[in-house]
Length: 402
Image (cartoon, rainbow, N blue to C red; front, side, top):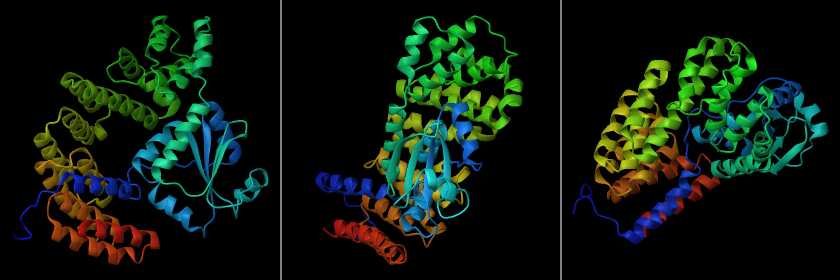
C-alpha cells in the first residue's frame, strides 16, 4: 500500500483522535471578529454600561505577562468569543502598570496577571477571575455572569402586573434578549399600540426588538432605518440587521426550512448588501450541515474558501476546523477540509497550529504518513512558540504513531 492510498481508521482510534482534536482546538487560532475593546475613560465605561444595562469586562494585564499576551493573541481575537462578549459586555483592556491602570488599581487591586474583572455599572465587582483562560472557559465565565445578573424574571413579574412605560419596556426587552428568551410577544404587543416613533426611546425599543428577520417588526425597522441610523449610527443598525438574519438562518437550519433560509438570505441582500455574499455561503453551509447533505456542503465550503476567504490563513483554518467537527468521516468533506487546511498552512508556513490542523485533516483522511510529516513540521515550529505547544504536538505525534 502506498502513502497515497487511504486507510480507514478504526472507530476506537477515531474516537481517541477526535477527543485529542477537541483539546487542540481549544488552543487553535479561530480568529474572526474578536472582542471590540472600549477605549474611553473608566467613567465613560461606567456610563456606557449603565446606558446599555451591561456589565463591564476588564482584562487587567501587564505588558511583560506571557499569559496575558497569549490571551490577547489566541482568545480575544476569536469570532465566537468576540460575538458573545461584544453582544453582552462593555469590554476594556487596562494596563495596570501605567496610565489609567494606576488609578484603577487603587480601587481594584490585583495580585496576579491577568486578572479578569466583571464590574457592574455602579462600579461593584460581580466576579474577579485570576489567570489566563482558554476560549471555552472564558465563554463559560461570561455565561455565568449573565445568569448572575439576569433580571428577566423580575421584569416579567412587573410586566405581568401591568408596567408598560417605554423606559421599562426597553429594559425588559433587552433583559429577555440577554437571557436567551424570546422578546417578540411583548415587543409586538407594544408596537401594536402605535407608540410615537419620533421618540428616541421607542426607536431604541424597536432596534432591540428586531431579533429575527422573519418577524413583522423587521419591516418596521427598515421603515424607520433613517431615524435609527441618526440615533445610533449606520454600523449599529447594520449589525442588528445581520444579527436578525443570522437568527432566522439558524432557525431555518433547526427546522430544516428552505423558505426561512431564502428569506434570511434575501433580506441580507436587500438591506445589508456589503456582507450578503459571505452570509449566503455561511448560512447555506449551516443549513446543508443540518440536513446532512454532505456533497453540497463540501462544494459550498470549497466555493466559500475560494471566493470569500482566498488568501486568508486564519479564516481558512477555522473553516477546515468547522468542517471536520461537523463531518469527520465523510470523504467529500474530508477531501475539501484537507485542501483548505493545506492552503492555510501554505499561506502561513511559520505557524505551527496551521501545520497541525493540516496534519489532523490528513490523518482523518487516512493519509497517515503525510499527516506525520506535517506534524513533524508543526513540532519544529512549536519549539519557537512555547513549552506547552511542544508538549501538545509531541502528544499528538504519539497518538499518530500508537
